[in-house]
Amino acid sequence: MSLLSRIEFGSNVYSREWDVLIVLDTARVDAMTEVAQKFEFIDNVDSIRSLGSTSSEWIAKTFDRKYAEEISNTALISANPHVQHTLFDHEFPEHDKNAFFAYTNWNIVSPEEFELIDQPWKYATDEQYDHVLPRDMTERAVSVYREQEPDRMIVHYMPPHRPHISQALKEGRELTEAERDPFSYLKNGGERETVYSNHVADLEFALETGVRPLLRNIDAETVAITADHGDGFGENWCYAHIAGDPRNQVRRVPWIVTDATDHAELEPTLTPPENTKDSTEDQLEALGYL
Image (cartoon, rainbow, N blue to C red; front, side, top):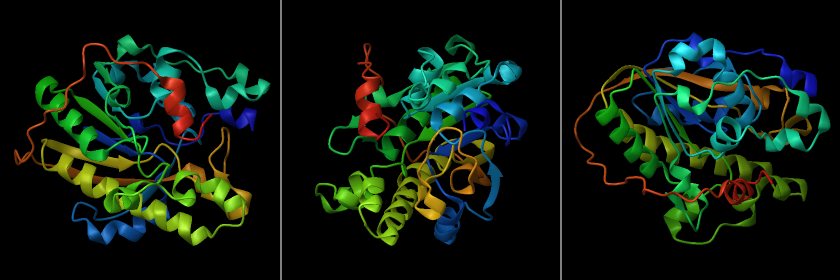
């Protein structure tokens, strides 16, 4: 799979039209289709083939120097710690486990070439559930969009990526084994329907508490909703997502086009502290990467 990690096949989001790009980490096309009718801003669920089967691959291939001009006008708001590893530290945790991946040749822009990069995972991660909650991501995105007025903005939410938190958060309880580590649960004989239902619930949670308020608190003519990659829940022996995987479970992602109108319903209060703690390794471990 090292060769597939090097080859660019799939759609770069910069080849498409959008003012705001919403990335829902690991969102599957089938899950998005299942919940679509509950959201007025989803008219049609199309799909594209992602450039990567992991976040670091997607980041490395998306923010390629060939798109430097477009990237220079982009504000990136990300709850995914792979932004730090890939753009700032030039480290690729999924690849380092395999020597072949060390020679992957990506021509990534430097962080300074973005209009702005904001990483809320450094200062707004919920300590109990190991995610930046969608509402907090939306607060930061609304602040940046209103104050900076970037030509383009990417907002990268973590749900529905594991751990699956929405039902535990709603019920005020600890995570179950299936919610905390769904893929170990599956491999130990757990029910696929349990894990898939948790994924769907977290996708709906992200759309309801993150995406919907974002679309009602910014003005943008073209908003695209997609994912960096999907997740495998045991189909064809595909579990989670690994580097260089060409299978549809992880490479086929949603593509939804809508718009946004600022109804001034949200007055953001979340702001980054002057000094943010850089604990990338801890956060990646919490998300199941290390």
